[in-house]
Length: 299
Image 1: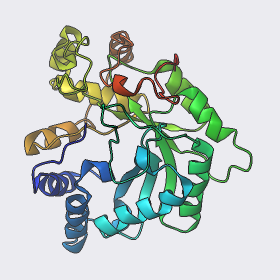
Image 2: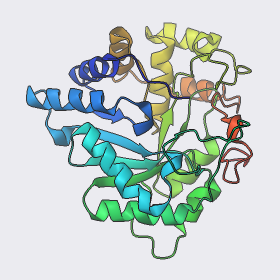
Image 3: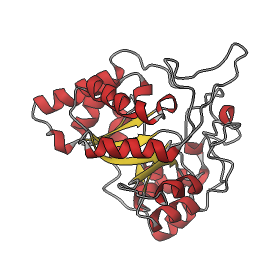
Image 4: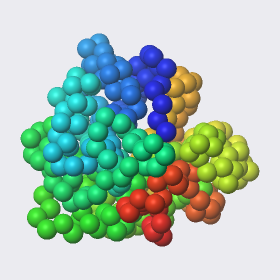
C-alpha cells in the first residue's frame, strides 16, 4: 500500500511546510521516508525557523511490531532514523497484528496474509513504558473502533490513556458517532484523507465519487472565494477534528494552510455535514478476515 516517495520529495515538502507555518508532521516508519523528514526538521531547527518544541511529530507502530518486546526497539528505530530524541505522539497504526519479521506485508506462497494473535492491551503497556522512558510525549491509536478503544480505556491499571484516534474523516465520511464517543472520552480525532483520496483502485473504494468535485462544496467554495479543498479542511477544523492533508506540491501545501482567515456559517456547516454518505474511501478489505479488522462494527 505504502510505496517509497521519490528521493528528496519528502525532504523538500516538509521544509516548505514548516516555512509555510505547519508544525504538526504526520509520519511513519512504513512511509520509508523518515530519514528525509527528520533531516528537514533538523535543518529548519538549525536555520532558526523553529525550535524542536515547536514541532509536533507523530510516528506510528506498524502491524508487524505489536508484540510487546518489539515496541520499544521499533520506536527507537524511528528516533534513530529521524535523529530526534523523542517523538511528540506515537500511535498504533492499525489494531491488527501481522506476523512479526522483516516483511511489512507478510504472506505465504499462495499469497494469503499472515496474521498474528493481537493483544492490544499488552502492546499498549509496552507503549506506556516508552512514554515513561521519555521516548514519546503522548500515545494514541489509529483506525480503532469503539470496542477497541474501550479495550484500552477499560484496561486494569491503565497509566496513560490514548490522546488521539487517527481515522478517515471528510465531508463524505463525517464519523458522527465515533467523533461523539471520542469527545466524551477526551480523545482527539485526527482525520486522514481529509480531502478524499487518490483514485488508486488497488486500495481505494471507487464507489465513492471524487469529493472535491461535489456541487455543494463547489458552490460554498465560490461563496467564500476559497477552493473546495479549503472548505473541506475548514469544515473539519471547525468541528474540532485535526486534519493532516498530504501533498508534495508546494502550491497545494500553501493552499491547504490558508484556512484560518475565514469560517463557515452554521448553515454551511450543517449543509456540508449533510453530505455524509457513510462510505469509506479506505476500506482495507484485503484484511477484512483479520479478527481485529476494525470496520465491521457500526463505529
